[in-house]
Image 1 (cartoon, rainbow, N blue to C red):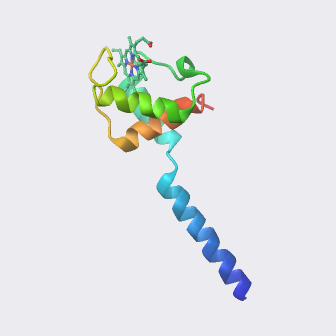
Image 2: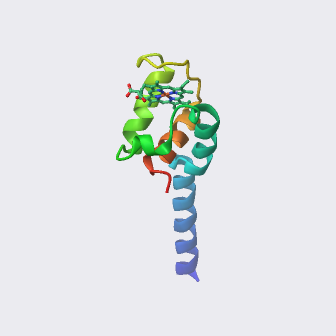
Length: 90
Ligand code: HEC
């Protein structure tokens, strides 16, 4: 029983840690289609990884990278879109 409890708390700790960190590609898909889909398709970012997309989009939002339109996104939305585009839509 002790071991069962230990495993249980380890699993919980892991789930909590990944829930806090992991971006949500499904949510990102929704935002990307709504706000970016007019001009961008997930296939445009083939081979890009989520981490570099995330910093690139963050730089656009911050105005450090030029972009055709003004882009307003929360940090969570940026991470989610990057996770979606970085996944190649699969
Ligand atoms: C009205 C059209 C339009 C919309 C809407 C749009 N973009 Fe763009 N975006 C462009 C154009 C044009 C470029 C430059 C050409 C290219 O790289 O495709 C670009 C480039 C980019 C780049 C590459 C920048 C670089 O310097 O490499 C990123 C990242 C990007 N857009 C993210 C987004 C995100 C995120 C959204 C939605 C929140 C969005 N865009 C919405 C037109 C748009």
